[in-house]
Each structure stands twice: as structure tokens, then as C-alpha cells.
Image (cartoon, rainbow, N blue to C red; front, top):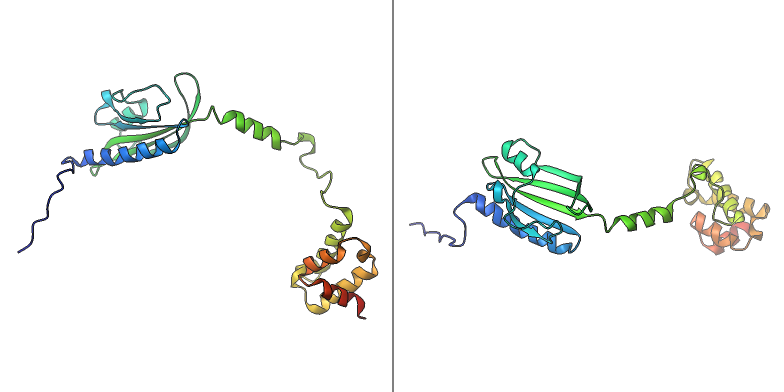
Length: 221
């Protein structure tokens, strides 16, 4: 005999209502994660005249029980209306700019029963965005040219010589063989690159060898 499975007395008999209850948890959690910044609204599209079921982190001044928006009405009228409309421009009643995302929720029969809407108040972010844009901006007439390299000239020339030598052998500086590295170090020594402060460390780093090895390569015939 098969044992009876106890029914969950708290589970709603209406599967659509179950969807709404689960969506409520999501709406509240997201709203509380972004206090003062993102309004989260859950619309019950089964009741368009009183669609707003949950409004968390209220920034628009609406209340639970208010009617559905135009997007909600379109989804009610057309099951093929897009499920997700993301990052579209919007405005709060007081004129503050908003970035909105609307997510339609369908039941098992393919009918829209709810919509979860996120309204991000970008008015608080705009001054910061402008300040950052001004901070990193460069003059338009010089954007396509490098007027200077922020590296000391001898070090830059040393790097160019080493990379050109390696490129001529279809390799990177560190991938050069021992004989090639020895030949390169002797050339650098002969051409006076060792006279620059820090050159030994730079050569060792570029070639992936120790400083003592650099000295040995430079001294041995």
C-alpha cells in the first residue's frame, strides 16, 4: 500500500498565485539590495485596474493597488509581446531620469500573469558619470597621436632593441635560446647599453634570466 503524501496546507491552490508569491520574494530582495536607488515593482496582470502588488524601495510615489502601466496592458492583450524589455529610458513623475527593465512572467498556459519591473534612478549617478568622463577626457586634437611615452628614453630604446632582435628570430625575448641571448647581451654591452642605470635589471627581466647570467654573458667572449 502506498503511503499518502501530506498536502502542504500553506501552498496556494491556484498555480498562478504561487507564481506571484514567489515573484514577491524576488521583488523584495532586489529592492532591499539597492535602497534609495532602484525601485522594484511587481504587477499582478490578472487585475490590471489594481495591478501593483508589491512596490519595494518606492521612488515613483505609486502605491500597492495602483493600475498597470502601458507595458502591462500590452502584455495582457498580446501573449507574444516580448518577455523582457531591458534598459529602456524612463522618467519618474518628478522628472528624474530612470533606466528601466520589465520582465514578463507567464504561467504554464503561456499567458502573462505578472511583470517584475526594475526602475533605476540614474539621476544620482549622472553627476558622478560626468565627473569621471571629464577626469579621463583628453583633447580631441591629440587623441590619435602619442606625444610622449611615460618611460625614460634609454629604457624605451633598450626594450625596442631587444624586441627587434627577438622579432628577427620569430620569437619573444624570453623565448630566445641560450646562444641567442648571449649574443644579444654581448651586443648590448658593446653598444653601451650597460652604461645606463638599471639596465642590467631591465635586460634580465626582459630575457627572463638572472642578473648574474647577464654579467656572465657580457664578460665571456
